[in-house]
Length: 137
Image (cartoon, rainbow, N blue to C red; front, side, top):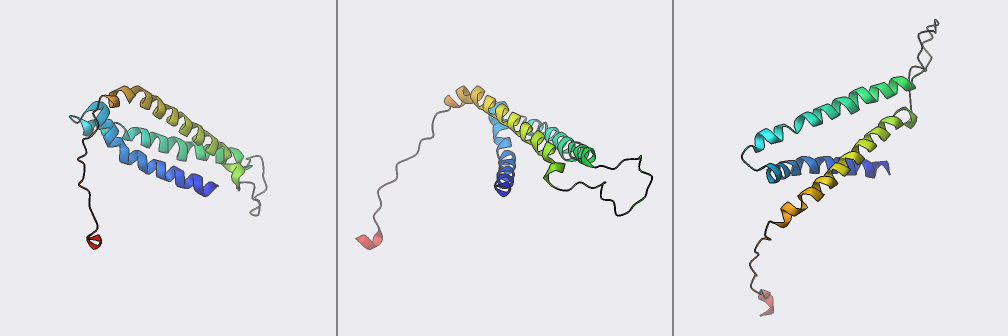
């Protein structure tokens, strides 16, 4: 189950980067595509800092039981370590909620641009002549 989720997340992330220039060009035109594309990068950087650095370290620190009140310096004490899914379950839930919000924004963008894409005429595909196999003749 988790591997499927990880694979889907990686696939979605790759698709986002592949489609982003096309979507930006469709919505804002080609004249300043480089500048407009550059404006999407701070969102990725900010999300990386917020989720993988600040949120994950905060949740990990919250789940560790290290206290400064303890005066014994027992090196065998594992109270300053957090193991298992309970350590980062909150991080996963917050990240999943952020993904759900992003999905909703994507659906809203799809709904708002549907009329734009309906104005684009379908491509004209020439009909190919019927072919017969060379061995059949």
